[in-house]
Length: 203
View 1: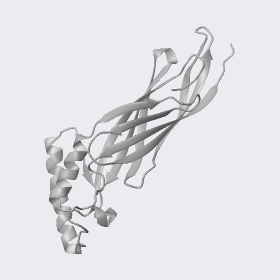
View 2: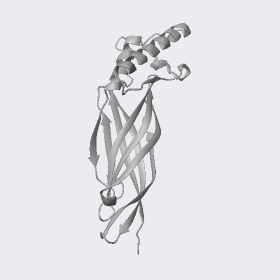
View 3: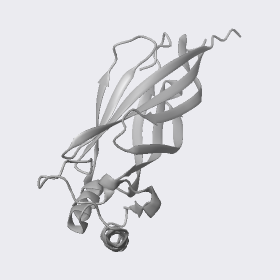
View 4: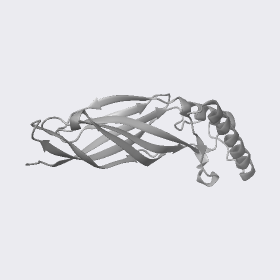
């Protein structure tokens, strides 16, 4: 049996838009905190996150190590609470742009108020010719990676899951990762689907 194998590189751009992004203080430049004040703030941040997590069973916000805080991460506790509450509310929406034959650009956005944080997800696939169906189908995923394309936060991919469906024509993929900003670590699962046409075009 002849089998045709092709590899495609598919890039997906994910944008996180949320009010937990850094914003300039309306009151002007914030005064530098003393080490003692930072310790007090850090303790209050921990209490705030524990309270929010207890009210939202599906949420697992974590406080990063104090040494990892940037100066702009030190905000008043009431502002930190607002940032954390907004992190809980984020939701995904999808838009697609199938502008190229062998590489597909997709975008997903976490909707909330604020600026944007972009993540690029790259998937590499093998396809094979299914002679009885007279079409190309997915054979396997060879890699699925994601990187941040913005300096406004930190993204770390934790893994992904993939399910092959529709007789090999569709891959249902969920990419999981950790987003860190303002000293808050939160995990996000990004759902997406890839489709293989009869000619082996991935979109």
